[in-house]
Length: 294
Image (cartoon, rainbow, N blue to C red; front, side):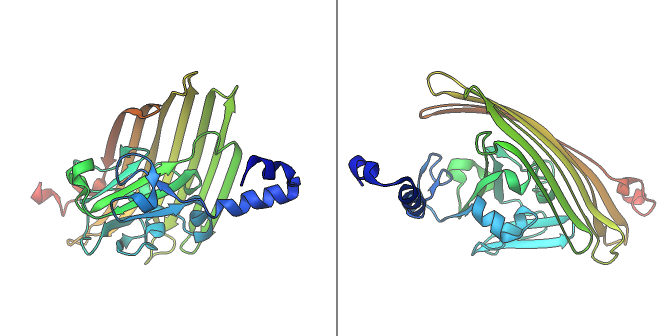
């Protein structure tokens, strides 16, 4: 439609046309070739979950969202623990699916797993989730043998203002989030988020299965040459019940994840450095039934 035709339309009709054109816009992805491209041109099998899909899903966590994707396998061992993989290769502590949050790996190298319930973001912050089904080790390394899940969060402009969310369900499930975002003079952006999740055990509805607290902070600066610098950091700590093991010993763990992330982008240039730390305490090692094996 030419600019002259745009100018002849009244504001109400113009707004309606723009809304209709949004449905014709093709989704772009960056997961298949490490750069933005229309999903129809992606050289691999890619599935996208948008923020609108998330709002309409009713899900309270990311693994529940991934269940809707054909070919994804989600195993929930307890109310506090998920394992996710692709095309029949799932198992406890699935270790062949790479999970990224804004380019930062969430894989625990020392344990060979992803703690899905400890991901330090809320569903409100997610702009889209890109899922590449199939080997991607050429681009992402050995952890991407089965595929990649790339979680992209919203920037400060997209989270402008204050956003609050509280949801609940059976088994004492309660999830809450508070996000503050905005910009200063169009060159500085900021985003702060707090969250708390909890749910009870399946066999003991009064027993705590999982409780998680998380905090994230992001500061963004846009240069005069359209360069962008982002500094972010945060942590998540949890108390999770993983059920009895083969010796009928009740397993409770208290994992903590903290991170820092630095990203600079300008045109086709992207530089990123990040730091991850995982801590975990468990009374299992002091249990008398376990001591003979230590």
